[in-house]
Image (tube, rainbow, N blue to C red; front, side, top):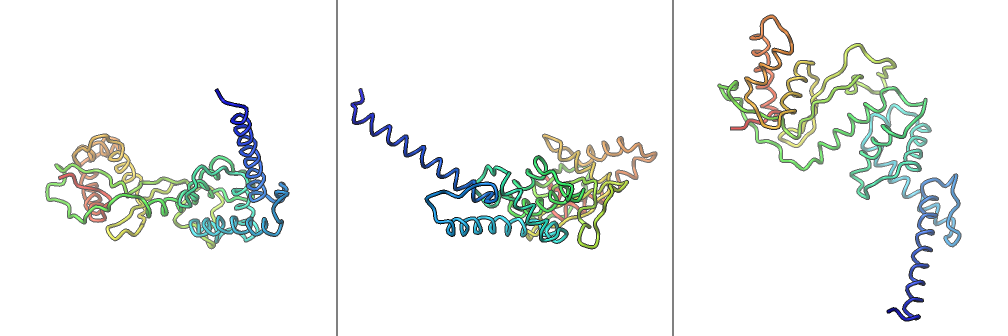
Length: 265
């Protein structure tokens, strides 16, 4: 059994723990939103303001670096308001700075609600996030290969460093001189990939190429190219399936050379 002295020490430890947690919560609340939260009573105000500026500037700088197009098309005041809203409201679940862009994307998708935002803001943020995510993805780039002569009978897979993407807006064209207000009639299809030199690139692709890559990506076990192309030809309802298959072979050869498609030989 615990003696009175041990019980007293345990209670003191609990009290200290509670006091520290309260102080920590007050400290972080002020850092996040000094307009609506008082600073800790036992910390110099000037020092708290310095901490606040340091934390906020780190987050702002990291977001500016990872979402450069969004930063360019938004005024300084609206940008700072956006960063402050994210900083004060979004509970980041990771201590790693590399996760901040993903947290920002999560915030835009689930928490952000402002009439000031462009209608394409979320899609553009996702496109910019993809570039960062692929640049740090922990996969080895496939060694450069040439498509074999009998490509139809070759098993292939989509590289984990190649992401087929579909957007309502042409996000790869958006910038200060192009800010679409309405959703275009035709969606935009892209493949963003990391090449053999570890540089991230994108290619605008057709809907049928996107569907081909989607089919390849969906398979649990890699299939032969002939099986993939036959499925695309059936779905397209083209009067001459041989044309679809021939076109698909040319596309796949180019994608193999770019290491977007991997050969399983």
